[in-house]
Picture 1 (cartoon, rainbow, N blue to C red):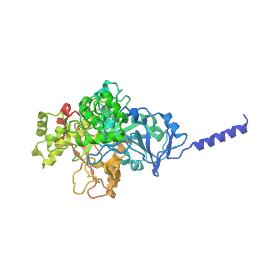
Picture 2 (picture 1 turned 120 degrees about the vertical axis):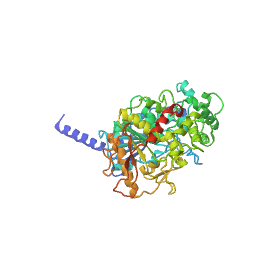
Picture 3 (picture 1 turned 45 degrees about the vertical axis):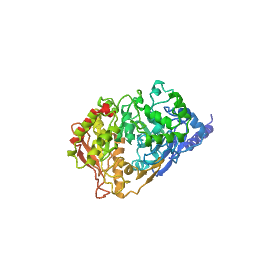
Picture 4 (picture 1 turned 135 degrees about the vertical axis):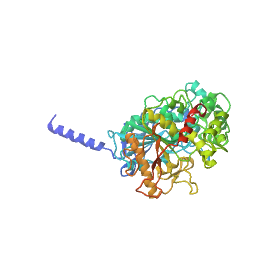
Length: 544
């Protein structure tokens, strides 16, 4: 080869390399390139990136199928795929407030990815994976935006998972197990989450993430999902840390326990008669509107026990009550950040015993008398306070003590009590209710029916407190310790141990300061420790 030809080829190669450089809001995952939305100078959001095949047709009510990347590439036809705007979310159930569900699409197995502008393979940034709440029945990840988080800390990648909900995601039947999946799969919505984690493990490096530094987190049903991931049989461990906000401690029962619920739902969808195989064939052929109406009817009219479509003991992935697994020490050995809000409860009823019996149908009269002894009226200033603690501890708050204690033995754990009212509460409501932290963490989001939200205004003090929360959370994601990268004004957050049950109270400054933290430390009350020890002893009947 002549010298001239060699120089010419070198120049051509350099030109091709230059042309291959992608803008900072475009990512090449290997089989296709995605263009995201640059929402801040340092932040890009990639919406609705698929991680599995669409669960439609014969795939309805089945475990997710590995994404066909060849199909995705052929559909793109060499063009960059526009991922700059949210497109759809999973079919919603009703909130139970008189609304109808049904919004969304079955073709929803996607993730939203928030990344620093220009982040590419080799950046090896820690990854935070978020599982939204909503009782496993509703929720739209786009309503909980993370771009402000990355803007504040442009050294992380954040992924938000869409997973199938309500009956479409959590229809249960014992014949699914007996047929080895030929009829359908229990826990399809939870299996969606596992498949999303597998996709993240394989492809997140293209967005600048490190698949070996993944922290999973969520609130309510999302925190319940996190708890299940910590004890489930998922094969290779796909995460290295966990954040659980207000764990939804629902009964996790065998599919046999859900037979009456299945039959009621199938009947409402027009698929009541016949064998389970005939019913499933009918449900797969039913219109999505018929399925949505049927799951709404369950919410409003079904009066039997175990009335929610939630994860069950499938015998393969989820094999025991989560609390029982934790008490045996059978859980992922990772650092844990876990807590709840001050006044929350997930039970409802006319009195404590009725509420607990409805929430935990297997409780006996003897069990209920135990709750009366553990939470005597003489220890509370009002019946409302007694009700909230006696029902709130077992249904949600006790994850803080039970899980925090267990994880402190094998790794490290930090616990909190969130004590700031939601931005969306009316001024007359002085209690700190379930999900109060969500509006503060996500730009004032005020979620509503069918995957919609509005955003309430935030004051400078709100924004300052939100930045404090985000710093603690992302410090944990980055270093497995909420203190390493906390804001200078924030107090040090002590480890939670069985010998020193200290926790942080996360509170906005009472004087509305933007330069002072309102957060402080407290010890877990002895009454809470004892109450949650009692709840742990009731695991066989609480079934959680």
